[in-house]
Amino acid sequence: MSVTEMFSYIQAFLSADQEIREDIKKVVQVLEQTAREILTLLQSVHQPSGFKEIPSKCAKAKELFCTVRTHLGELKTKFPVEQYYRFHEHWRFVLQRLAFLAAFVVYLESESLVTRDEVAQILGIEVVREKGFHLDVEDYLAGVLIMASELSRLAVNSVTAGDYGRPLRISNFINELDSGFRLLNLKNDPLRKRYDGLKYDVKKIEEVVYDLSIRGLTKEQEAGGDK
Image (cartoon, rainbow, N blue to C red):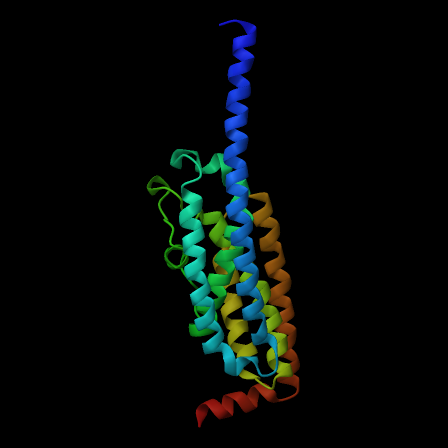
């Protein structure tokens, strides 16, 4: 093979690679738009009247996740299945955002932690790497940590809305989450930095609970729960 032929081959390879990346970017842009729509929908729960609307907002969010599954199904066709991590950087952020949104919906409905399998099912993708387009464990964990920040905000807004029991439940949940993450030996730098933010979320929620306790509002909740 001559030098000219060799570089012509390289150029053909680069052109094909760029074409794949452009196709991926187009689908990812649509996914990002849908993720923004879901987030905008769920942001209303932070409003004083938002807690009453949680069931309806979660139902609408689930409808939008149907659109997400369609777009992720399209994304799978844009690259060779064995090259997932070669192009992972293109959809990593939006997949983490979608994992957060799925986790937030599940928490709002059941006040429980969504599993990685459940998130994958909501998104219509795999958990096992060998099966193709899947939810990487670090993307799942990043989504859970984003949710923790959202819950710290929800705890503050719950007080404003007069719901004094919710911050206590959020506090218990976040503390359990923090204990779970302490068991992990995180090597991923971005994920470790995001976990550092969880410590601030824990502190922020503890301050909310402390403020409620010195005002005697936690005792009111306990008394109400005993009735």
